[in-house]
Image (cartoon, rainbow, N blue to C red; front, side):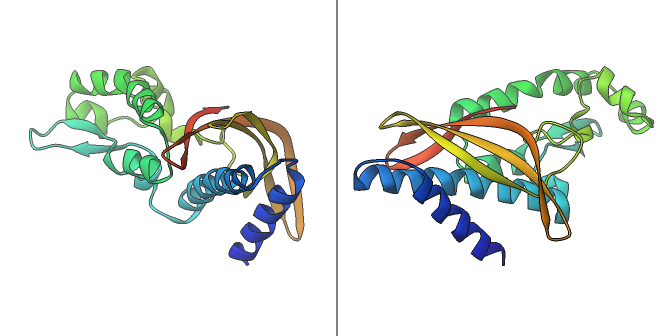
Length: 193
């Protein structure tokens, strides 16, 4: 069912985009696949998998202190075609947390029992869905439109939805994902939440 929905959505995206030329049609499909693949992974991994895959995790290192491990998270963002610039932005987003952890004992960290303590050290990323932009997880996305900047730049406007029984409920908030074409591959350069 999931694959059929994806094929249907890609087909509708392809049909709804007014483009001229085979390359633009193929690029439209590739751009849609890139966006759908990322959000499908992110939503699924939050619902059904270990959260080590879609966010940084805390680890006790060999010197018996707490460190922030971004390895699996950044590997997945790379797999789902995040640009190096966006990956670097992600690394920087967690720098304050890492710096604060370096100044803290393991015992102090392990004694945290409230989200405010994580917020105070810049490590409260486990309190929301970063790529959705809130504390509620959606069930999927719909591409509203692709904006053609030029042959190597696109923006994709998406909308989140939840499923209640047989009914899709759209959140009525759209976000824009920016992509660029590098060596015949579309990569994500920004997610404007």
